[in-house]
Image 1 (spheres, rainbow, N blue to C red):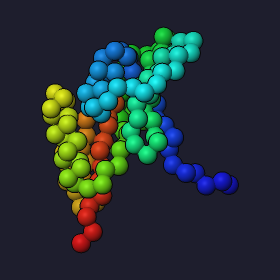
Image 2 (image 1 turned 90 degrees about the vertical axis):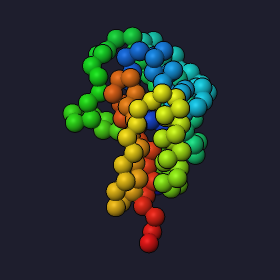
Image 3 (image 1 turned 180 degrees about the vertical axis):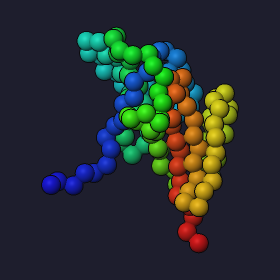
Length: 131
């Protein structure tokens, strides 16, 4: 089998595209860099580093149920950050953007969790420093 080289993109479905675009622009500090429009689908593309893309998608038809990480499906999206200082910097970014966040320190690493307007969990994660 050919080696997988990483993720090219992650796409999430949202119920209110305008509200979600405003959220992700505030959180990521950037506007979308592209758009894909197909019949019944409108997706905006945010750069998230390393050539990877986060797609924020609204469908014309579909469910408006809020995301629940305890149900089968997507639990969360985890973005890699170099160290705890980087995680704290994302917490500052979220706070300044008016977004609630939860910083968690554990033996294995440091995680900042935020939820978008649909309840999709976004994590900024750095592994624990080696002793």
